[in-house]
Length: 437
Image (cartoon, rainbow, N blue to C red):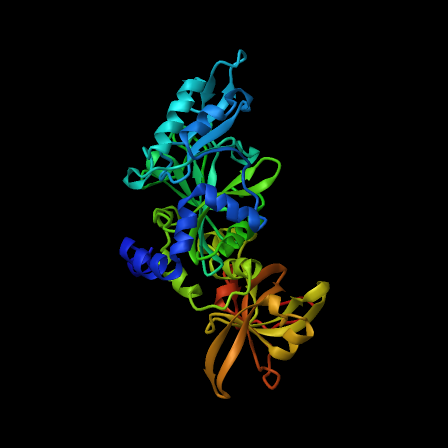
């Protein structure tokens, strides 16, 4: 991780939180109850709220006995997991509930806790707060072996409608079943492109295995990954929030749900991914992103973890190819086209001819990721960067690619070195269509 790629506290506050988030956006993010209201308007799934407490008399008016056997009691403006009680089960006689860290609470205990919340015991500056009782989501089966009792969540940093970085937060025995890094939870970096876990930290230090076990934390595939990213990116439609952290839980039956959003998310996600946020944020800062779906396509094209890509290529083995290859391009409505392409390690990004892109239906607005200004022999051009899928030597590759005027050139497509990992180019071998080498 390069030092000039790391986002620090001051840069986060001055260049992203302050410039990208309005006062109204921060006010919404500060309140979990208000956030849930806006998410509902946007049609974004959230755990059900059973009861809200704004005044002490609301505590007395509520029939506590009607509560389900599992739920979460939370302050609306609490930070760092403070003040949250997660109830796992109810006693058979209905006299008490057991928390995820095996504490037994009575109705009177919970009433006193709500009073503490209302008086501001868990809010910044001890200002009066609100409390609410929320549905307990539980653990998706994919995380059963990795999370201790509580519900894991996924933190996604979203900027300019683009998910730029993500991590899985796993509760531990030390964290009391809470997915909070400051309380002892584990942070696991996730490759944006594939949803596969890459690295992990515990108390800021790198680890390979779940604490007190031999379960490897890397290489875990997160279920419904694209839907998780789309849910996070769509949350950026909350008014006044251009830069945010979105906390998502994966319901065992109903899929991704947003727990809360944060207008000034923590920076340990950089350690979990061993990658700096600053560089990623700068890459999407000036892009004209039309909606959350395009934001997800941009994220997958830009932020694929190099180690994951190399590992996947290693599993497939190194393939020897010629400097010129026949490529199968995939377009709209499963349309395919074979073209001859030059494999050029001198170019970073893959490029295809505009007429081919148009023929395949790849220049429709929904497939254009962004536009780039380029100085060429034709003068200053605005070249579309599109999402392109092609097959090279039997391997399917999905990438961002530039569109240029190549109709008069020998090869209508160039494959750049960004997409040549796992290939060995032998310039001494000529391409033969019969044997492919």
